Image (cartoon, rainbow, N blue to C red; front, side, top):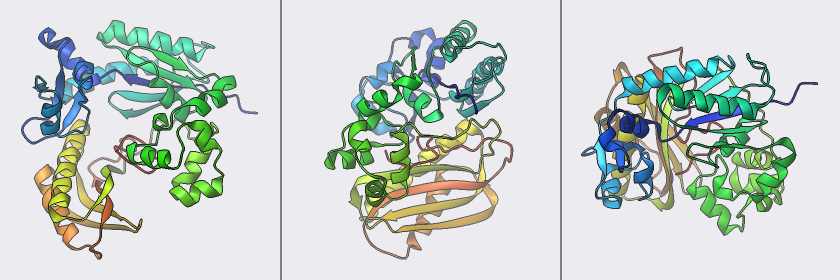
Length: 361
């Protein structure tokens, strides 16, 4: 019988913004946003900015409206990668089973670890202490028996804290967890669940698999399993990145050209930001449309040269939009880039970093 796994999810606290505040003391204690600018989107926001509702992937115009004294800082990805490399070196002192999700978070399987420390909770505490001592930055951690639970747990005591979900406490924890706190349930799905009188885990658990699949399609099985603490995904240190994607699900269906145009511009800018973080380029751009009736349509364009910026994404997305077969209200738009310039990086699901459920915002 296999031993019960011990999984840690480490998540740096407001990583890009915290690096900027670390390197520039004049920014400490202030509301700052990394990225943004005149027509961009926010890559990261300090905790001081988050108090005003500023979030990553938010258009800079909206961020300014919510926080008029917000300070925009140009991203320095080389610096973030430098620090991220130091942090990953710390991880590898404990285990080789490290699965980075991005520069600022990763899963670690410490079921068997290089230091023979029995308690995963102690390992997480030691790693967080090492990160602070060696970089000056704080990290939060979640510890449990699978990736889903560890990811949910890491958000409980943020910033600069950790949470362990012990195997004997999993059912109680999940049954009392607000549905919007479930990893994989975004705002749109949470609102829909609220309309179905699903407010916390116990309400979700009361639904049969058949009911959930009828209500949420293929995501229904995912919800059925995770509310029971079932998630068997392994920590995979060498996954190859296939694509980079951004998506938006709309609470109110849209069908006006001006609305679609605005959304495509926003998605193109966000995709440009995502690619900048990874130093990734691709030759195939795909437009994804989900209609009001849940009909799904995708169309792609491949070119000889790499797509490199938001303007190219937007212009191509508009061309693909004009080729759509149906002229009816839509509930989701997405752009993804594939045929990438690297075969060596891990598989990343950029939109909320959730590879196993429908994406919402």
